[in-house]
Length: 90
Image (cartoon, rainbow, N blue to C red; front, side, top):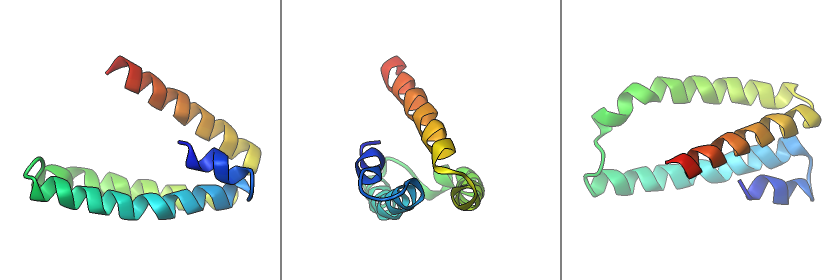
């Protein structure tokens, strides 16, 4: 949530979002390995969600190239508000 606004000060919104995704992917992979090794989650627990992740990434990659910067800002802002509300209410 902090990387995209910081990057947007230096590069356009599309590149900021793409860079953030490129950073998040390896972090998610490493953290999932640790969760599996610690036996907090199994691969079978995660498999039902894999298709949604693939579909979401495909849709996101297409939209990232098609949307204007102002639309990306609105979508990202709404996502940040939604994520903040979820953090507070859980």
